[in-house]
Amino acid sequence: MKPAPFEVCHPDVLRNATEMLETGGQGAKLISGGQSLGPMMNLRLARPSQLVDVSRLAELQRVDERSGSVLFGAATTHAEIEDGKTPDPIAGMMRQVARGIAYRVVRNKGTIGGSVAHADPAADWISALTVADAKIHIAGKRSNRTMAMHDFVLGAYTTDLRTDEIIIKIEVPKYSKNVRWGYYKICRKVGEFADAIGATIVDPERRYCRVVAGAVGGKPLILAETARQLAQLAAMPAGETIHDEIAASATGLDAASRHQLATAVGRAITEAVGL
Image 1 (spheres, helix red, strand yellow):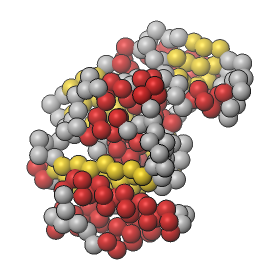
Image 2 (cartoon, helix red, strand yellow):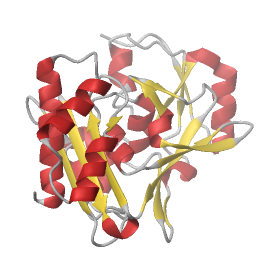
Image 3 (tube, helix red, strand yellow):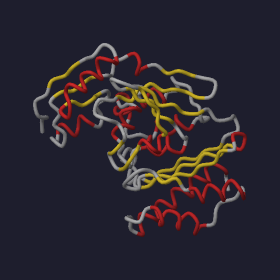
């Protein structure tokens, strides 16, 4: 199928982009890599009357390294992260996550900011950035703001991003050289969206331990009790802990889906700490 008619605007600065979004209202949509919006338009699941192309905005392409974090421009492609063209603040985790996204042709165009804004619950960056405690930097016509990743995602394909706002940066904390991490997803075949995701970061130097279950049909689950036991005991949490915590939080999932999630989480923990 072909998309419904639309026009494309190419703002030269960020302020112009936010003004175009405000003027266009509900009919205006941002586009950068187009790997999510493009197929939806072709199927006419999305019918924007105006596309605001932000792929060339300098503010969204720049990657800044600070003493305690790395700020990825929202237009940074998955391939740039995969190829090591950007710093990796989690000792290789972001490169591995990027490498597992879809196929290379998608990674060449798809962007980290676009994935976060789309908020597909089975997409990789939603879970990976939640476990990393990333922050989302947002620009609007009247003000700028910053949100924790876990607060930014409200549910499946739903975020706190307003119609006149743009994600400009994704800030990921730098972890110590001794950080241990695990990221495991269950897919029917390579390149497909995940049926279950498990993600873990353990950094004793920063006194940080977080465990996340993703691809749950909504925002990723932070498994606080599982992480507490992992940090306290330095051992794999009891099997029923992972299962019970997932079951208590993901009440809409069937038994098979909960089992897949528990398996993915357990394997991510094993990857992280070798237990």
